[in-house]
Length: 153
Image 1 (cartoon, one colour):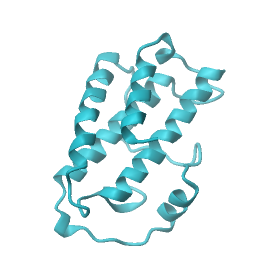
Image 2 (spheres, rainbow, N blue to C red):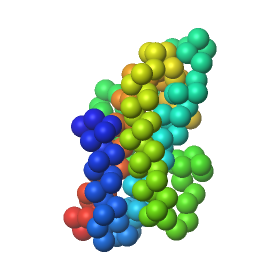
Image 3 (cartoon, rainbow, N blue to C red):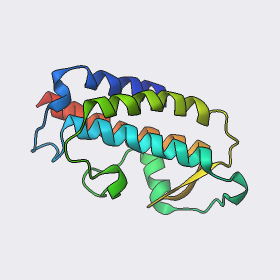
Image 4 (cartoon, helix red, strand yellow):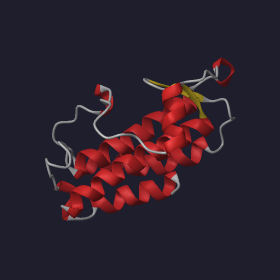
């Protein structure tokens, strides 16, 4: 699944009553939170990539990133998202829709960047464009799977 496919999937969740569904036995957060967190994270990463100075990128081995990349998934409930992509309160559908629209534009923009544009992840360190795309796909897929489990319950 590409980043564009993932944004399309997140957008579908906003168009049904399922957007407000919560199942505390699956996740403390509802579908709305997972959609908003996913697209906001993706957008902030894209903006960081766009605004980075590729001359300052330094590739450093990170065992945690290597493991996540190898297994292509993130374990549930093991990490806490930083406040700027976590502390939402009530999720506003109109804001989520604006972020989704913005996401489509940002994904196109990062495809034009040089390979050493980067962003600094709070656990994995500096990830260049190629690695950042992988991380966004793995991260968003993690949340899509949680959403699917919520909707099954």
